[in-house]
Length: 357
Image (cartoon, rainbow, N blue to C red; front, side):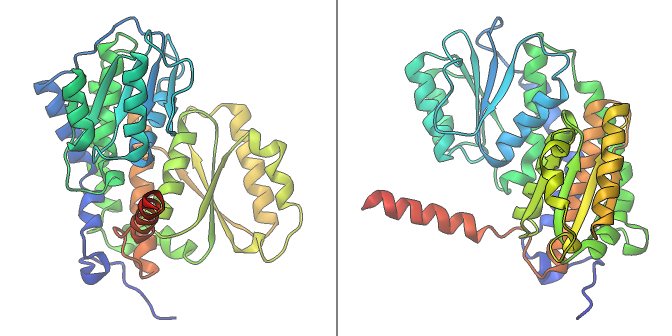
């Protein structure tokens, strides 16, 4: 097999510059904070019965990360809707966030239309597009995010504003100090995880080479880290062009574990990636330990990645950074353009053709 170098610059292997976007994650946080300082949120209601985030892909995972991070602090429910319709609980006493980086996501626009029909108070997150037009029409506060980059690379441009919206509602304390910690942490970690860091000192490049060609299973505890596991799975798909799976304990131990019962060619091709966090409970740690041991006995390779940092936001951001870098390096090892999303573009075109019949 031809040896593929992971030393930058990557040239034609990263023709559209995904490496630079992954490297710039700490700056994305700073930029988001600066925009919010200049133009803070104006929530249309302060006593909402719940907060519902409507979006897909990178927009939805930003909502999931936010809800998971503050689940034990929120006085009212926060839910993420990846659909064309809101559940019945999203009504005139709720607050909806319509999130679409492009402003043209089909499902989010459908939710916008239904929110307007139901009289649901809304705010919008978009770089422009039809969603920005509808926000102007309905008088919905709009937070403009930068355009011109793949939505999945703009995660922090959506995640940071959602956390500050919670603070504007009075549901959490100001998250800015935690985000400042995350900026410093991600900058420090970039020295070893970033594209310019040689493979000899880069744990993400080393792990990518170790697991390349294997089927990827991401396991974690429940709660906040589970949202990061979803992010890893999505990034392996979009950046790495790889099918992957994610699951959490303890649920895994009540069903999926039986799928590991027979050792064979399937289990022996799996690389299990275990995400660990300092807030994992003793019960969760015991289950992750035993789950990893069982997978190893069935022929899988097992690799553990620990969060870093103090605040929960910073710790989750550190895992996101590692996963984004890992997906980039897996793409390069597989000869795939980490930016290309031909499958999504083709699927959208076929949907449009079908609708036009």
